[in-house]
Image 1 (cartoon, rainbow, N blue to C red):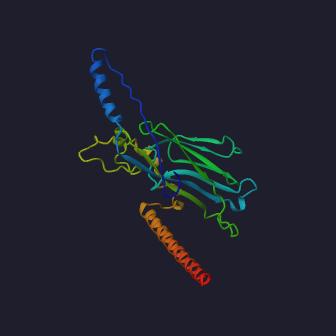
Image 2: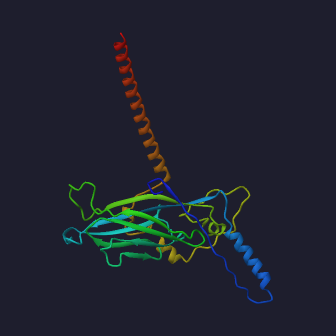
Image 3: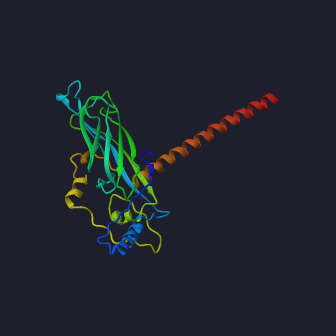
Length: 273
């Protein structure tokens, strides 16, 4: 469900394995490990977690360096809504470019999930997201129309101010595994709901090494100054404004209908007389 205020739901699954150290302790250890893994694989009923994301592109006109087939440099990406590392959820991203590009299927195995190229034309890019196995084994495909030229095509183009097109969305995962929540319960990229009274999670698993986490964090990204800001408060304000516009339009239509009904009634009275 992709739009500026929609969400997507995805399923999930995770395999479990264990290897005993010796034949004598095999039964006892397998039971213990299997028990722990069954607990971590347990689906949490009536629980839904969401991951706010932003996907889009930033494109720069090359100005005097522009040629017929190389007029713009652009970057297409999927990022956290607040520029946090979303590698904790997304394992890899596949960008499907226009067939005119060399190797049009581009795979990005680690965050930041982005792709930079140069060209002259606009086209639709399919972005397929693959999630970590403890969350979901089904990929999700987003579609983004690469935008190079400003809406006002009659105005002058600037090589300093880029064209930015972004969409905000939330990916919703119903009934996540307990193991996944243990792994991400304190991660800022994941919205974890309040759990049932009396239910507590084990201590969080430490995040991966700081260097990898830093690479996936886009707060210091060179394009971050052009990124748009998205927040639930902004979304609520936009929804409230849209609701007011709809209510005003309905009130106007009711007045018009009332006037038409009155005119019909007058014509009927005249015709009856």
